[in-house]
Length: 195
Image (tube, rainbow, N blue to C red):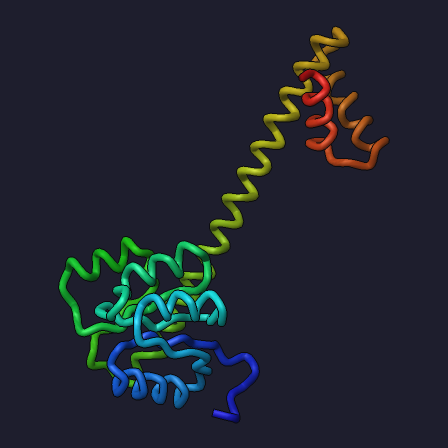
């Protein structure tokens, strides 16, 4: 569609049956999404996802060369995009495997145009929540590591200079301000000088 708004989400469609793939592409474009790639097997889907970086990937489960579940797992583990499985399989085992792979949405064929937007919106929202949580966890990990290095530096200063913990912390804070670095950076210098 040439009249898509610039903020239209981009989609990669991976489906081995050409007719179903064309129908899905048409439904997505009619719904205002921009299809930027099409793949007929799982490996091609992974390769295209890496290159195109779509906002969401629609992936069939049963495909040649590489099944959709393992392709979805790789796309998700690399942090490329959320995956919505599009499949005729509604068996519990397939759904469990999709969940274990990190799939964010699941549509069972046949489905209609009205089913696409909710599946995409939920998948993208869950993906963003997951990315936010990963960022928060990384931030917490960094703060914990910084705290640990500051504590080690304080203990070293207490031993070396024969000062209290409060004095060691004040020493670190002043040294950090004098050098215009963070407390963790000056603490790392103190710790590395011990080695």
